[in-house]
Image 1 (cartoon, rainbow, N blue to C red):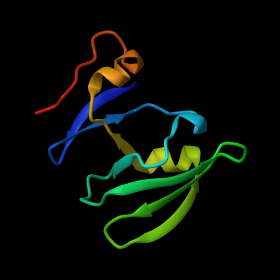
Image 2: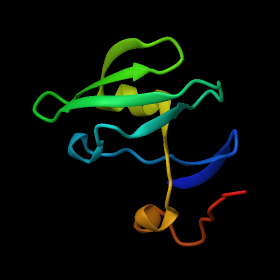
Image 3: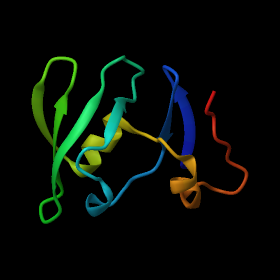
Image 4: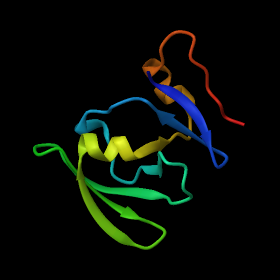
Length: 96
């Protein structure tokens, strides 16, 4: 179930699996395990479903399939209205 969560003072979208075409280069993600790292998507190969990204903490460049990437990371959301359609009825946004 898609939901908003507050991780380290940032609103993230968790519990939703995006299609490869909907993962945008330049978007920021946070590890789902709650660690303080930040991840930036560099490129998405829609044909293969591979996500190429950089761990901004150590500048390490990585690659993972779309599903595996989303199992590990949650999208940082700047405007919750952009993703409201993904939430089930009754879900809430935690933005404090």
